[in-house]
Each structure stands twice: as C-alpha cells, then as structure tokens.
Length: 305
Length: 222
Image (cartoon, rainbow over the protein chains, first blue to last red):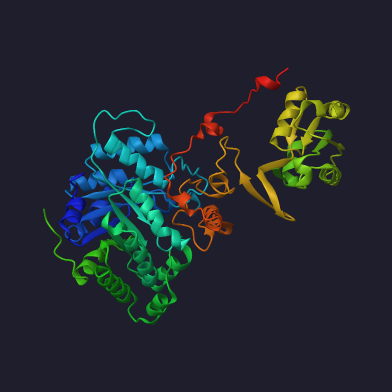
C-alpha cells in the first residue's frame, strides 16, 4: 500500500472500480457537498473533488475533501496548474495530507478564458507532467521541487487524466506513457461517447503495456437532456460527442431515461474492454442519478474493507 | 519586431485635452513596419487631433515628426526643437520608445499613442502573430523552432494538453495549437522520440517574473 486510501484498496483488490465526480458549490454551503457525498455513499469507492472546474470560482477542493474525510469517505483532490505556482501547490499538498486526504489528481486545468474570471492570470508555472513528477518526488524522495528535503514523508496516491479525444490522436497513448513515467498510480479519462475512438486508443495503450502499469478508469457522463448533449459537443473543449449519440437523444421520448440508458450501456461495454479497471462517473449537477446508474450497470455492492 | 496598434482617437484626444501645443512623434523602426506609428501614422494622427479639436471649438497647434529610432537617446536629439516647442508629446513608438523619450526629455511629458501588443511577425498583409515572449532562456532548439512558451496558451513544456483538437487550441478555433505544430514538425523530421523526455519546470526567473531585467556586458562597455 502506498497511501492506504479506499481507492487504492479497491484497485488492489482487482474489483471493477467506481469513482464519482462531485463539483463544489459556488458558495460556502458545505451542507451541499455533504448532501451529494451522502447520496453516493454506497455507490462509489472514491470522490473526485474538482478544482475550480472550467475556471469557475468554487469552494476549494481541499476544503471539500476534508469534509469528506470527516464523513469517513475517500476524496480524490484535483489540482490544476492554472491558479497556483509551485510554492502554493506544494503547500496545499502538505495541507491536504495533514487533513487526511490520500488521493491527488493532477491536471493542467482549463484556460481561465472559459470561466467567470476571464481576466485572471493563468499561472501555469509548472505543467501537469511536471506536477506529477513534483508530487512523486515529494513522496518517494522526500524532496520539494527546489531540492530541499521534506521534514517527514507523505503518503499519497497520484493520479492524472488523459484525453483520447484530443489531438494529435497518435500521440495520446504515448503521452499517457509519459505520465506513467512521470509517476502516476492511476488514470482517469475524459468522458467517452465515441467508443470507436476510445477502443483504438486502448489498443495502443495495450500495445505499449501501459494498462499493466497503471489502472485506467474510463470516464462517463450521463446526459440529462438533448441540450446538455449539444453543449458538450459544441462547447466543452476536448470532447467528441458523435452525431449518432445526438440522434439517439433527439429521437427519445424520455430524454433523461435515454441519457441514463446510454451511460449504463457505455459502462457495460467498458467492463469488457481489456485494460479498463473501472469507471469514473461525472454527473456534475446531476449527482442524484449516480446510484441509479451504478445499480443498473450491475456494479453493486461496492467492496468493503 | 515589436508590434503595436494605435490607440483609439478618443483616448488620445482625452489625454491631450488640456494641452494647446502637441507634438505627435513617430518612430522609424518596428512600428513603421507594422503600420502603427511611422511617419504616415504620425501625420494622420496629428491631423485627426487638429480636426477634432477644431470641431470642438478648442483649437490646438499640432506638429508631427518622426525620428529614426525612439528607443535610443542619440536619435532623440533630432527632435529637440519640436519637443521644446510643445506642451506635450504623443509618442507613436512602442512602450520602450515612450519611456526613452521621458528619460531623455525629463522636463516634458511624453504620452503613449499606441498600445504595444507583442513581439511577432506579419504572417500575411494585415495579420501579425505573436511568437516570442522574450523569456530569456530560448528552448527553440528542443521544439523544432516553434516556441511552446509563446505559442501554447498555457506555456506548457510537456504538451499538448487535452484541449488540443483538430490542430487548434481550446481557447479559440483561430489559434493554432502550438504543440500540435511542434508535433507535426517533429514527425516530419523523424524526431518524435524527443517527446518522451519529461521536461522539468522552467526557470521563470529569467522572465519578468525575476523582476525588471537588465543586461550588463563588460566587453562592450565604454
């Protein structure tokens, strides 16, 4: 065991992992976070807490993570490179560990242009690859980025994301290999709607043997409406929503049910893709649907340790 | 070159509204080439100020002149007469030129008439593109001559990020993904292996992050 988090235990057990995404509120209402976390308690193994996703100011992921720790749940703290330099990130990592947080996910972060503070400076002092290596060095070598020693070791599980739907497509599996080399323990992907492209990416991932080095959790998003599907297709950077999926939503009498059904079918399919170790369900702003999806996808009961 | 864009006339008019003798000073270097602050633009701007003030019934004396290079003291002497006759100077040079003027003629105020936008090049007539941030530590040899600092919106050294699609950057379909360009060029030269190296964090202290920069060369000092 590296960090001893619930996520790590489930990964080690070989069970098909389920993680869920929880978006902190645009307020200081901790009870909202608790409410959504409680809703998913028996249905996910760990919770991603987003770091001001799409550059919109929200309660800090570490603060929300600490709340989950108090609830006996396992948070995965997201950290982006957009808002903090290497001093702040390292300080926040120490703080997060001190608060009982054990899983950290490293991301580059959407450009501030997309958020509600488009005039903010994009920090990007280090990039996501360098963030992974920095955390690995803090953990394994007990050294900060600048070379100074930590006074005591930290135990964290390091994760990252990769986007099979970004370009150049041919490079994406190799970039994941680079993240593995940089030091990750698990990976989550961008949401999958284009299964054909995902399968082609996984083929390359298997060819490179990456799936044997790190568990890959495939991302899924349940679509709540046709509008949501269209929005993801046209406005969310780095996503591909094929026309067939839109057509299916368009033709459905009950859009919500169709969205759930597509998500469940996607998970059923992913269970049989060699090298996929689990799913990451991103039902942001529709958290209450997670139990139904997990149930219908046959992912219950979740392992207990 | 340094690329600039003339400020809106209203902004310039407001800046000079309290003055009666204005000198519009062009520069014969970069801003002439990018058609923002050369002799032609200096004359046009002087004329526009004059007309607007006449219309508003607040007459003004406006002269225009252009020096060969506003960013060096020695070239500024050629305009001394005009500067001494004026109440205020509107410089159409880049920010460097404006500041050189204020340093050289400390008893007169020189105002900016253009916005200095970036260091770059004209990619076609009327289109300029930023391609150097002057970071003080060039990495172009590692990236096939395409700058990841200037041409990646996130200045990544281990790109491209997940926002790169169809060769474009997530911030706009009008912006090429710098890392996609690097990838294509590495591929063309059979050097994709270079991407496997985890590039360490950049030393940003050689940029403005390290404070205002100054270069001293003993070998050429007098």
